[in-house]
Image (cartoon, rainbow, N blue to C red; front, side):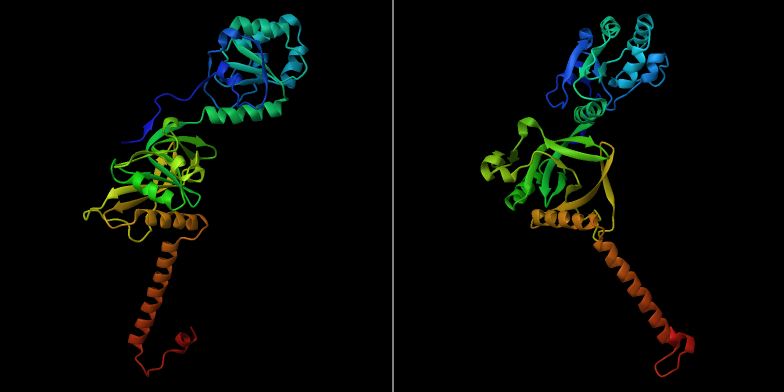
Length: 342
């Protein structure tokens, strides 16, 4: 089963955003009730003060628009008729949501009437612009993060998020169960929900109905939390390593040196991938534990395979030089002074 990506980009209605319990600031509804179903599809917030002067270039209607002290003070200096014209042009852009952050100052009557006329939701924040922007960005990063679902098993091994991939029946769940029995933690089995986070990380979570559950052939569906306790499960983990499990084949030249650098791309993020052949007699749990430890060492700047082959190359070069010298100057013959000094 190949990874499936959502067919439509994530979005959030204005009504859902302002009523979200995870939002760290309180937003009071002001106007534009007919626009509660308008979509916010952009994770970044926009302060478009120039739009109030009639310069609309660069305004993205699907971004949350913020009117702070600077914008409101500009509107306050305008004649009511001029203020109505400025706000009519601003709201006429088809905005999804406008947040006013002037604490303690009621909105202008022209702002309320023009927003209602255009069907643009306007809310008043309980905090200043800096706190409001931070809270909105935090929520939008969570709600509008790019997402996809992958068929695989995600395990926390020594603090490293290891995603096991491979065709159905290859033994991913059985391997994960063995890892859990050794003290590691299961995150998701069968379906891994992946979401992107800045500055370029992918986190995995279980499908809600499958949370804490594993399906093992011969045993059926198991609740790992009930069987082994809360320390055997984890709700979310960054994916640091992808392990592709394949059936052993003599026709495939597997990496035996550890010098290959393969990557697996998830939501535009390149994550290191290794291919591990599966056959009877191999302890996959042990191999994955070693793979996780080796990845942690690589992340600290130590690459065992490259260091080994670098030393091997230097040894071969030195040995080659010594052999050539011995051939030119047999035992008992004196070498040139310059060579002996070297």
